[in-house]
Amino acid sequence: MPATAALALAAFVAHAQFPLTAAQDRSVAKSNAVEYLYPEQVTVPAGKPSAIEMHFRIAHGLHINSHTPKDDFLIPTVLSVPASSGVRLENATYPPGVDFTLPIDPKTKLSVYTGDFTIFTRIVAQRGNHLVQAQLRYQACDNNACMPPKTVTVPIDVIGQ
Image (cartoon, rainbow, N blue to C red; front, side):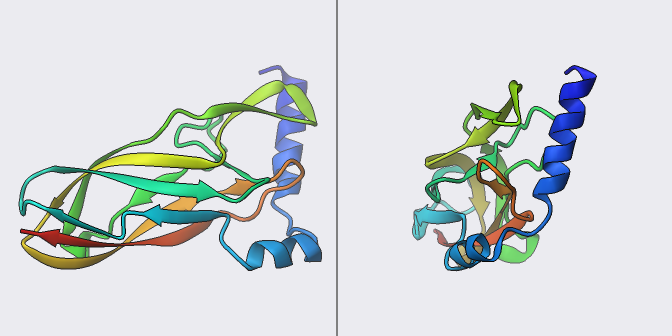
């Protein structure tokens, strides 16, 4: 990336770390930028790796960085499962990001998610019923500013049989 483009992008990101206007903040505060859609409950064989698709929706007009953003200083989207949950996240496969261009620097492309996206996971559950409080960490932005990074709870009832 040319030095001027890097400086412009860094300035945009630095500016984006400031709070949104009061009107923007109120609209975002009413709901999360990312909503977990489903599944609410899954039954899997205890002790065996099982594939689970986790579906999410990003609020209209917003985007979040993909799991593999194009610059190191950008915050990736990451799903995690607490170690104490009785369920282990063996791996997660994230969708590829879509190229997105900022109005301030049309030559630089970001890798983002918009709309609906799915994370394909493999989990291993202990025997029993586990109300897992998984977490999705992301940073949501619109075309003018970014909100602070956020971690939301992704509740899923995992039954290991």
